[in-house]
Length: 628
Image 1 (tube, rainbow, N blue to C red):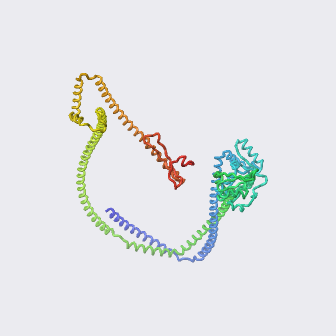
Image 2: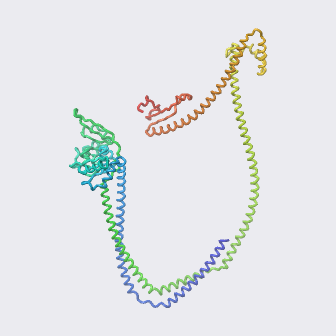
């Protein structure tokens, strides 16, 4: 109903808006008619328009030239900036590598790093260039070859500064050692350069042995540094080979007569015996690279920095040129806007009458359309009332249905209340039964305990009976598997059947025996003594049996507390041990070895292994796997 009323209000508002627009357009048409009556006949404005068009054409040509220049300069600037970013990224990569090498130097040789920091701030104190520690100057062409160079050059020289003259070296050592108390190494390049020294034989002659390069060709260093390394370590004459070289090492040593060679993973030093003239070789495994794995090309870095400076200068020049072009562009745009405004005013003066006539015609068309779109408020009110009446009828029907459902809900709520009361009664009965069940469970446990106690008592009495039966057979001189003689059976049948009657009969017989004259008192005393001793031993035996049962129970509890965690621990060890052995393509197991469950001092760990797929698992002993 609210939506219908809202739609009706919208219709009324729309009609009021239509009336307002009609009034506004009528007023606008009247004003334009008055203006049209006052407009004179257009004068001849064509010469002025043509002059402006010619000037605009020249401006367009100048602007096109300026825009082209700006595009060219902008494109060039973008290219230079892109190149500058590329150079910055590359310099960043080189700086990261150098920083890593310097951090490594600092962590290993603190004094050398302190001397390096001092040198970089005091380079002007020396006559010639001082080269930083060799580990920073050496740049590997391929990092995988770093291990050959590091195994060839001593660690002391790796951290040594290199000087081109002795005066600079002495000045440096005096400053470092005497004044700053730092422990540093320094070496001097040879007076005559050895950087271009030739090997004893070309590398092409050695390729058949698997050699692919001399040490000198694996890295780049400044010329004085290379001169020192060639002089001190003969890097120009030490070849580097591969695994195939190692495979024919005997032949290589005999045929090449080289003094030092490298294979893929080993270094060989060959010496000639002064007595036997025979070659003797020693080989050592190569240690992994530590200092040269992140080499930085110093020449490349210097070249990149120079390129970066050139690009910065060029960008400044391009910015100045671009500023001038943009200022010219703004001036031409201002002049273009002024001319277009003049042209617009001229065209408006010539076209004003036509514009007014066209506008009046357009507004008349709009007015005619508005008059067609008229809305009758009374008709709309009637339509709305009809819709609201239909909705009220639906509303009345829904109220009737709601009343029916409320009555049904009341009935269901009453039923729910009855069920709740019934549920409470059942719950109380359930609680009562649970209490009775708990009480019965307690009684059951007590009865079970009494049963076990009586069962134990029965077992004890049975054992006593068996013992007494055994004694009786001994007294009667009967063997264990001998049947009871008929006379004994007849005698036992004549005895009473109950324990009380037997005790009474026994007492009667004891009394009768005591009446016997001539019976030795010592025999009766000995009998009574033996009977009492039997009773004491029986009680002692029962006591010890109970103690034994308690000990067994305690041992079982302690064993469970100790053995279960032990088994879990051994299982974890077995899982990891098996995984480690599988990683080296072998099989291994670990378990808890028990010969007898009660012999705890003989518990042990058993390791079983298999190193070949064709064998079975064997216990790890000095007899099966002595090497293991």
